[in-house]
Length: 262
Length: 361
Image 1 (spheres, rainbow over the protein chains, first blue to last red):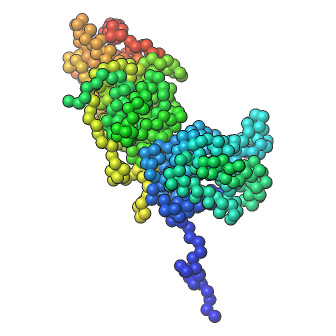
Image 2 (cartoon, each protein chain N blue to C red):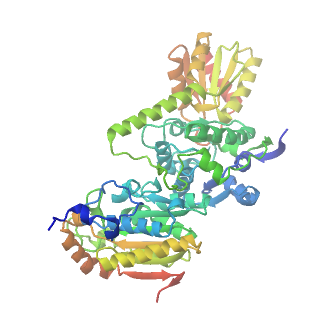
Image 3 (cartoon, rainbow over the protein chains, first blue to last red):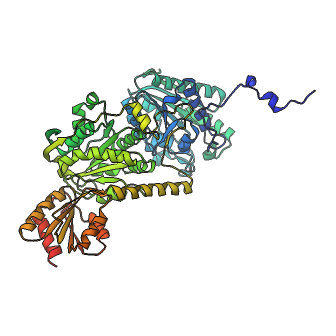
């Protein structure tokens, strides 16, 4: 019996999964186990499936995903820290028929960019905001974020977040859902195959809303791990996220078609 | 001849923005320049030309809206006054790094801090030496009349796109608030989306299949590449300084003493020169139109013709005077005169300063 070689297996008819062309071949700068890679992938897959890539302009933030423009194979603008919703507003107002989205982390969106986030949502800018919440500043080395949980240790809360002196974590997603300018608000995760499917569905809904010129902004939070920042293995980080992050940041749709989910 | 109107400087600037074919204005109110956005909102430019006008939540948001829109090749601008311009510096540094064309106006008021709402020229350093972080420059145009508030919008956009750079119209509370006759230029049509795509291949307008994606960024983590990018920027600034110097000489042919001034100080100093001439003093006015690039070589040439003294007149504690000193390189005496903190000097005060500080010695 002849030996089976790789060439025998890798044939077009055997193809069950292919990386979308909307991701470049550049090696991701994210830590192994991090959720960013998956979030990038499903965002780009959605744009490809909806056939929107030729008229999409993405806005990259400052933070771990500052280099998102290196990985997303579409026209991209890199924004100053926290300013992505304002940058996206400028683009969308000048090109109303283009699809515009921001991709931001929690420090970018919920701390330094709080004003830009709330006002873009409140104006009902017809853009998509994808918000990766891992409860920590990853790129700068694990400092406390606006979404760091009470008691959670970070390099600037080495004895745990003391809410008396450091304040409480900010539930930005619940907050923007209250604004009349948001049309779709959802919180998802990408730590399991089922969660990835649900997250992709939410991101797809968000882009469909913009494509269909629905009145308002679509906002999708993805609760993610930061195993290196949390100083855990990827598996432990996902377990810790399920046990600690999800109770505080519950997953699911918060607002659909402009109506709060009861 | 274009349409004649009696307008405030701020209104002329706003009307010129519509006529220049601007695609968008993003602003935030602040005295003494709020008439710019008020005029634009009242004029409904969206109906006139399709121009977008948006009141942002802050000056920071406004300049970042400019950044985003400018990155797509659109003709966009903002305006503010001193404290608001300080807030825009972050965005302006990014605009410099990413080489985006845009226009903005500063109708300067007295500082520091919240200062006063009265006119000032104390933002010269911020305007000409960078303002934000990093090694960068921007073209600075200094209007001295309501007419120039209009004309420099057209010129400013031309220069911004010629060099992919931010152009600043550095006005002050006098020029912004005073009313004068202005001849408005005819409407320039806005570019269509297709024209923008063809004219500005660097702009992020949506990546077509089989083409390279466009990236607007000021970031490069490779220091050697960032050094090369900085060399590129410096070469561009050198080209600008060689080609875009603008100034006006009044009574300088036989002048022994020259007043250097810009904006409303130039208007006041022109009167001071007339008063000096009546007294038999051979005085002249070197009016700066571009503050960056600075007409240093032209000042050196006048030095060689035997100018005995220079008086830098500005509504600040002495900022532009440093560039005059650097330019004349000790060939003649250079002194500064100016009221500041919101006070405007009179022609008589300027003449007195010329006699006391320059001629008297």
